[in-house]
Image (cartoon, rainbow, N blue to C red; front, top):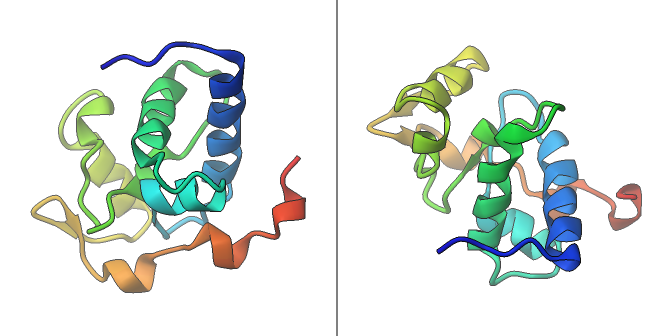
Length: 121
């Protein structure tokens, strides 16, 4: 299902991008964690749509650092080929086995615990 481009959705997408840019090198977060931080906990899928659309933007959005709630690389097919997302994570020292982040709990970055809500524009 393709989403429609409404003004509110564009604002949501922009917030997703701003949060994604804050994920530290060598860490990962989840679609749901971003959605919860934005006060829209049931919008994990929309976060995924936003990150899929970010590849057309001129600025770098580290979408490879966002995985599903089990640490699975569910968005890997949006990176050009099936190994690019894993390679980008490996370049940051994140080990992936069978499309799952090893030590996911240790590598997990929670925006709700790490970002002051007043830090976002």
